[in-house]
Image (tube, rainbow, N blue to C red; front, side, top):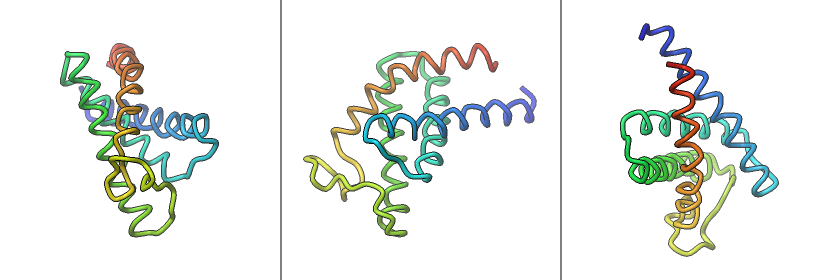
Length: 128
């Protein structure tokens, strides 16, 4: 695939994540933050790449959950810890790490990885 086509494909994938992630957050909690568009775009690119490399459904979903959790941790450290924007805090949840990630949300990312698995397969057919 030509580099321009590849950039265009990943720009589309990033945009889908950048739009969908904040919408899901608003539907779930009633609010979001503009930085979540950046995180969502990055997460969906990671999810798309994982789905392109692994064919096993369970492995894909588990790796996608891990990728989203790690991205959330990275963004949490930047947005919440260093910039002090206090976008989220999971300190009250059991099994949290530094208040930035927690087991409950990792499980929710696993559940969300199921429809994303099929969406990625659809996009791969449409985008090449």
